[in-house]
Amino acid sequence: MKFTLQAKDTASKARAGVLETAHGEIQTPIFMPVGTAGTVKAVHQHELVQDIQAQIILGNTYHLYLRPGLDVLHKAGGLHKFNHWNGPILTDSGGYQVYSLTEVRKIREEGVTFRSHIDGSKHLFTPENVMDTQRIIGADIIMAFDECTPYPCEYSYARKSLDMTHRWLKRCVDRFDSTEPLYGYEQTLFPIVQGSVYKDLREKSAEVIASFNRDGNAIGGLSVGEPAEEMYAMTEVVTNILPQDRPRYLMGVGTPINILENIALGIDMFDCVMPTRNARNGMLFTQHGIINIKNEKWKADFSPIEAESDLLVDQIHTKAYLRHLIRSQEILGAQIASLHNLHFYLWLVKQAREKIVEGTFYIWKEKMVKVLGQRL
Ligand SMILES: CNc1nc2c(CC[C@H]3O[C@H](OC)[C@H](OC)[C@@H](OC)[C@@H]3OC)c3nc(N)[nH]c(=O)c3cc2[nH]1
Image 1 (tube, rainbow, N blue to C red):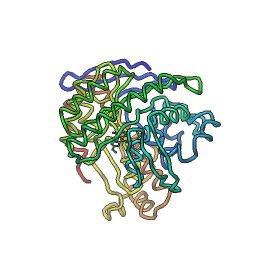
Image 2 (cartoon, protein in one colour):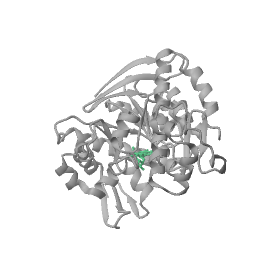
Image 3 (cartoon, helix red, strand yellow):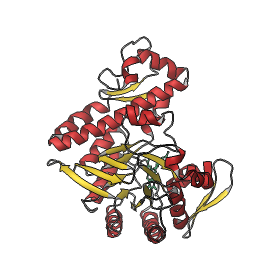
Image 4 (cartoon, rainbow, N blue to C red):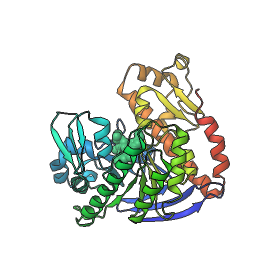
């Protein structure tokens, strides 16, 4: 997998690049719509391509492993065939999902045992078997099996967990490098930097991850409840150490402001459930700030959802109509709001990329972060 840097900002560490995968190229900085069970909730994939020009979507190993299951995905010829998405796909390894979705779980050197949140059945994820699982799903970019430490967590716990995550990474690399892709195209494995909010642990983990010399590197253990300043401080430490010529993926981030601040710190790839999850609850992100569409003030506001947007649903539908749909819990409300928010996130990173190429990113970013957080 080839990453080409095309431009670097002079006033920050922001970069613009192109990431070539077996299913097409990705212009970075990029936002990756979260598809949990093989679909981006409430958005059909022709909308992802035509309406919002999504370039890469995510799949979730934990969910797909449990349902529809590996036998179905293998018989289908992998996730791309199963959900008819011809672009790049990235899957998380499942570690985080086990911590965030299941109560009963045990973390051991061997791996993590847990009970399915669907039917309570018992399962074991190990570094080896999540590599095999991601081979069967067939994502272009797969993530190492790691432990995402909670926030806050004791220094001693963070250090012990970090050492185990590094041992698990070695097992992931050995397994991945000794198995072949199943569907005739190459996949790539990203290791994940941990270390909680401790500078020395983050430096150590970034050095270990960089030493594996993989096609790209991820930063984990953030966007787990820590203050934004801590997130930025740890990102800064890690991007100072990770190689310049490989893409950096900051997992689970974030709000529009988080994304712009982290682009300035040298991050190229982002994912977050916020644009789709919050959309279903009526929270709309716009270039003028945040709209809670359920608010009384939009009841008879017949202006377009976002006049400046080139998204059809933003122009033909009014705020009053979308408010009505969301309050009535109409499926169309979730569809319109999700498409709007994903379109906004992709517009934002595309704008950032254009400003980086133009050399005006930092000024633009400073102006945008003042506007994006305000409540309309
Ligand atoms: C929110 N803050 C957030 N999310 C972190 C995810 C999960 C990302 C994952 O987050 C949802 O899973 C729950 C998404 O599904 C709903 C997944 O998309 C398919 C997405 O996978 C990339 C992390 N994953 C790993 N493996 N390691 C991490 O340290 C880590 C940190 C995160 N912080």
